[in-house]
Image (cartoon, rainbow over all chains, first blue to last red; front, side):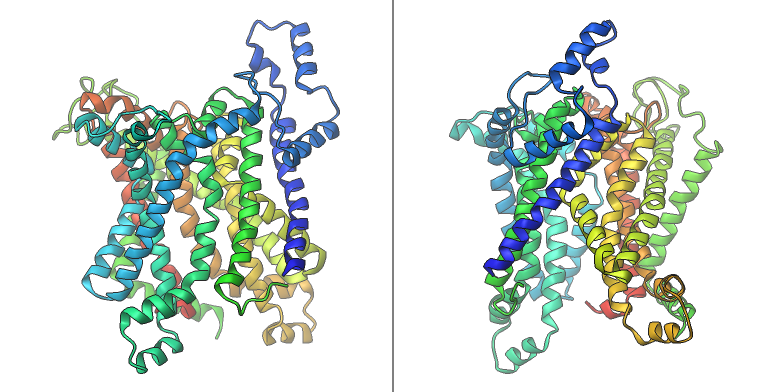
Length: 311
Length: 283
């Protein structure tokens, strides 16, 4: 087990080098000279040379790649081109608003989806099951943008139940700002979540051990909660855990629509301003999160299913 | 069993599923609309004024008009062309990359496998949306960047599936038989193994097509996608400011157009999986 974790941790190194390579190729090789964009049309040649020097763009390509790699291991991303602030500070500031929205929304939507899936698995093949399935597929076929626009217009603008946009970091006021984006998040995730959880649960329901449990005279509820759910837990854990790093990134679009000063909004601002260092930082940070939580979900396997021995 | 009978069998099973047939018809209809539009046979006059600004839907103008008095239904049709072209282009880029790398990795194993596994692990470690917006930002706004960005992100899943499946088939008797009569590596891989795993490509493409359409809409909404042409994404972007003035038909037009194609692809994808992968049937 310890050996496995160490090996997986070591495998993070080539993967991080690879991620740095993708980001380096995109932002330092393919992108061309960003100083022309940054200085505008009236830039003099001298200004451009000075700026290149300042941004470290006149180093050799290999040295620039090493800079990207270094930032992936030290989380020191330098300064934003647009706001001139230190990026690691900007990320720390943005993380809280992002988590205020994404953490409760994620927890509620996961629990709710799991409950709905167990419920429809119990009534599998009946009308309610079909209804929920149709509802999920139909719901997933509507653009996230359409949900956000409609909900914001209807519940915040028309009915005035929530604030249209903005954010406040103090507790009771916070709710009126994040409630609506959180509700939209939940509505958006329930479709794919229920669909996945339901499939996983039904995969188990036709197994022999379920028949055995039934023949012992166990109630259907007990079979579902104690036997089926326990076995369905492995794919559910991967599915849930792997989503956690994306919580830090927040919901790009939701934060943008509701003017929440989180990391998602920050990323989109950086996108609009061609602020390469911030884009690179967010790409690296989210990749590191993804890699770490991938490892965590693998380790959780052994907790959920002692039969799996990681080698 | 030869390959033909699997495909025939699958087709037969698919035609028995009325919902799947209806979905197939919808998908084909979208393709026809997209082709006709790209040939300039329909909706070529989308940029012309057909009436007053922001007319509500009526008999004359099914989906009303936008702020410049252009027909919303024509914009929806042009948007269909953009969306379908993105799906096709992304598949055309992703399938050769994913299949080749996956097949080589699964068949040869060893360092080839190590390299390909590293490559797709690396690509899948960067969250899709970050990779998409970065690539389109760097390559410059426009539909071509969207094609490349989606192509470069959607091969990963296919590659992993093909690798796993080829790995399973490598040791099967029919491959040994091919080796016994003197078949080389390339012959075994491309003539014998690939046809037996090719159903995965179809199932995966029907899923990736939806992802491509959804991503195009978001990228276009962010202003990274198609320029100077209507797209469902830019129509939704327009609607952002129009909704407070009661102009809902651009949003409705784009959302409805997107709804039917995504719904059809969803149902068709499930039906294809059931028909082509009989082992999964009943689950």
